[in-house]
Length: 196
Image 1 (cartoon, one colour):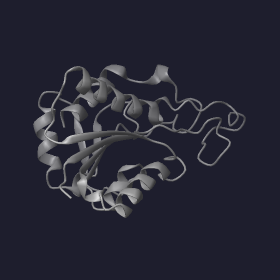
Image 2: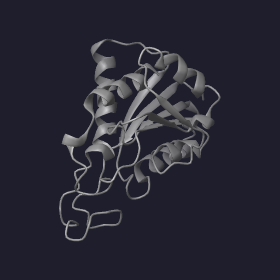
Image 3: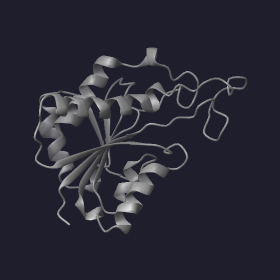
Image 4: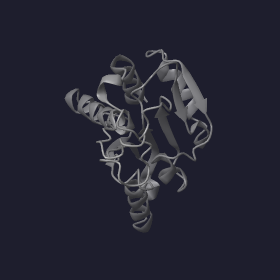
């Protein structure tokens, strides 16, 4: 099939009250709500923002764009893996030109980390070209084997790029709250993803 669709996605799930595996809450905090503002309300909101922008402005991109919000990422990339496996079984996986992911893009400090740059020779030039208007400091990481939904696509031959602003002490704890997000910089990150 013609590689005509770009997928833009993020995972929608988080840990709830943290009773399952994955919580890093300190003793006594495990029963508290794990809000997941950065992980990954930030990425989910970014996907919705791009979709809204494209619809409102009647943007006609070069390729079809499929917007996806995955579930089960925290349990092992379940939603994106199921999507890719279903497409593979239906012999439609070849329609996907690239996967763009946002996972934890809300706590910008020094630089945006672009992960998976090695999955396509095009990523470096595209990042450089589209970042001219945005001006974010970038750190490029080659590996596309990541603990996020990009891996579901990359391991099946689809080039995958993921945006990430770095780990922090509130990761997987009740402390990952909306008041700690860097909204102006998150908006710039989403703008770069939209341009790409």
